[in-house]
Amino acid sequence: GNSVTQMEGPVTLSEEAFLTINCTYTATGYPSLFWYVQYPGEGLQLLLKATKADDKGSNKGFEATYRKETTSFHLEKGSVQVSDSAVYFCALEVTTGNQFYFGTGTSLTVIP
Amino acid sequence: GAGVSQSPSNKVTEKGKDVELRCDPISGHTALYWYRQSLGQGLEFLIYFQGNSAPDKSGLPSDRFSAERTGGSVSTLTIQRTQQEDSAVYLCASSFTGTESSGNTIYFGEGSWLTVV
Image (cartoon, rainbow over all chains, first blue to last red; front, side, top):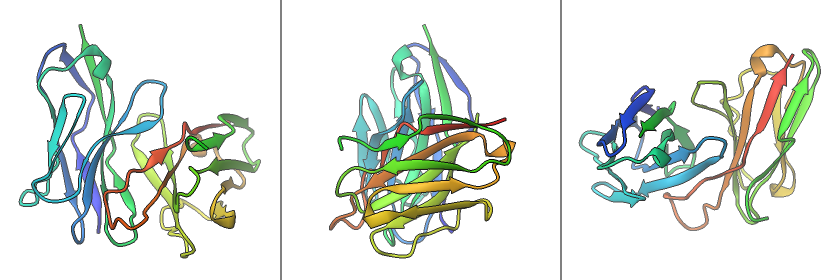
């Protein structure tokens, strides 16, 4: 079946620290991979995506590389800011039927 | 519309009553999804509509839950005989699959907060 597993939170970091949020997936075929972010009091929105192996998605200083050999799509940022505090969701889209599957979300709090 | 619109934004209902939640997707989007987000939990898939195909209802938690999508646009999620464990945020999302086989961005509404007392 199709599923997404991401590291459990909550994660608390100091400002300017390095961030990694792990995400691994199980899927049939060749899915597209996404990171969505939910800021406090707001709806989910796309952060970045990658549609094929070895692609790197990037946005707002965040990066994630589609690793087919390890079925992973880990989210990284070199220097987090207080404004990055949010819940981050890893997701995949299967090519057949375009169904989306989400991880359970990882809460990040960045303290000054 | 400019984005996915959901109503009501907040609903408090008594246990045992029926509720209807409405979703108006982005105009032209062929795919529509319902998810549930409980306090401190992740996104739980409920149901998925794609064009004129039969909906994927595999995520509906019980037969008290149903959804329809009229005219390929607006969708209504109905919860009958609500229970306290139904309290959650119900999120609707849509996407335009078009000619892309994958990599389609899914756009979420603000959600409908349901509280069953």
